[in-house]
Amino acid sequence: MLEQVALVQVDANGVFRYRPAAPMLAETVCNIVELYACKPLAVVKTIHANQIGKIVTLADAFRFKR
Image (cartoon, rainbow, N blue to C red; front, side):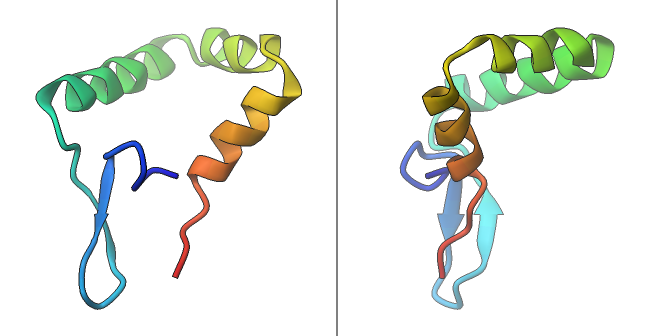
């Protein structure tokens, strides 16, 4: 999923690397990281406030396929 949303790339050896395809994506990730560092509970509550399907989608984004 992270590959599909252009946040990671997979090399010929199957190694995943964080490599956002656009500056806007990198900036968004940085903003989320900063927000989580300051207000982790707010980020967690936001995730949990959404429907379970969206949480599953987020969790699936962290599954690395080989």
